[in-house]
Figure 1 (cartoon, rainbow, N blue to C red):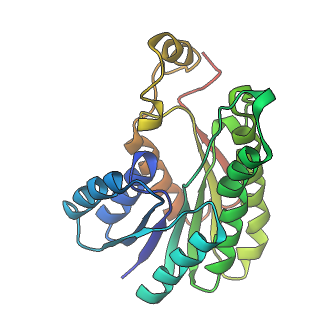
Figure 2 (figure 1 turned 120 degrees about the vertical axis):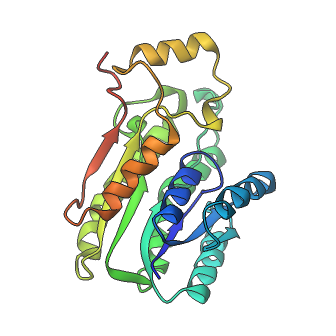
Length: 240
C-alpha cells in the first residue's frame, strides 16, 4: 500500500487532490481544522471512491496541530510516499488595520508550519517519495489586497526550493504548484464585476476547475524528474 497526506483537504483544491490520490489507489490521510460540515461532506466523497482514507482534525496554523496530525500518520502507516501541503490562510484586512496577530497567523499557516510538518515527517517519508507545496500565482505576482498572503506564498516557494538538498539524500522530490484563480468555495462570494475583471486578465477567460489542478498535482507528484520547480497553472494569468 502507498500512503499520501494532504493537508487542508476537505474542500476546494485539497478535496480534489485527496480524491485523485484515492482514485489512484493511495491510502489518503485527509485533514481539516474546524469545519465539521465540510469534513462530513468530504467523507461522503471519499467513501464513494474508496475506504482507504482517514480524516484527521488538526489545526495546521500551530505546532500542536502539526504534532497531532503527525502522530496520527505515524500510528497508522509504515511510511509516507506523497505529502501535499495545501492548508493556507489569507487576510484581507485593510493595510492600515493589519495587526501583528493577523500577520503571524498567515505566516504561521503558509510558511512556518509547513516547515515544521516536513521536519516532523522527514523520517516517515519513503525514499523516492515526493512533496508538493501548493503555492500561488499571488506569490509570483504582487497582490496588494492581501500582502501577507502574497509574501507568505513567495516565501513558501523559496522554502520548497530550499528543501531540495535536504530531501536529496532520500531521493525525495519537492515542487511547488502555483494555481491562479480556481472555482472553489473561497471564490464564490466574488461580485460578478470583480470576477469579470479577473477573467479578462486570464488568456483562457475562465477560472480553473479543481480537478484540473488536482490532475496536474498528481502529474508532478508522479513524475520522477521534476524537482525544485515553481510551476504556474493559471490559464495564462496576466497574459490576456
